[in-house]
Length: 238
Image (cartoon, rainbow, N blue to C red; front, side, top):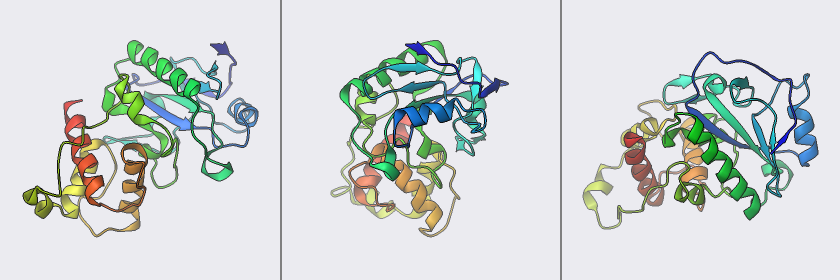
């Protein structure tokens, strides 16, 4: 690990109980790191993980980094004060989004495990920037291997144990009200009722980027329902 301090941090007022993963979303790693250390930019993260697996520490974990912005999860807003932020080098959707290298993913996993060992962060609170800000963020996105992280003890991933094609009772019960309730149970900010409006589609796309990356449509299709009900069950358990 390499220390590369950023001046962009301040005092925490809350205990850490969230881990938020981002991609840098800039053309080069150097540009992203320079911005995270620029006092004029007023943004930062605790760590940056480069594509070769190098980990940079920018802000001490006991300090509040400025990475989440306007955000919401499980009834709480302004999440910087209670979270640790990891920036993962990737140009993102704007500059040529690409797969995350194996070495980088392994380094992210090891870093997350070390953070989880130091802080009381429930697995349901290991999330992406798009989860906590679905109306404005897409990162780390559908190419990030959340499933592999969960299989190694970081975050949640459900077993596809519900067959909506043969379970008529579940299919008949699927309306937007239980979809919205399931999303709220997981942690997303959604209205309890309403049609499939742009706000709900944004949240569904965020859910899909994390838990159904093969179909980021913003629709509550059968495959999304399988994952949604599975994650809802896991989130209730912690």
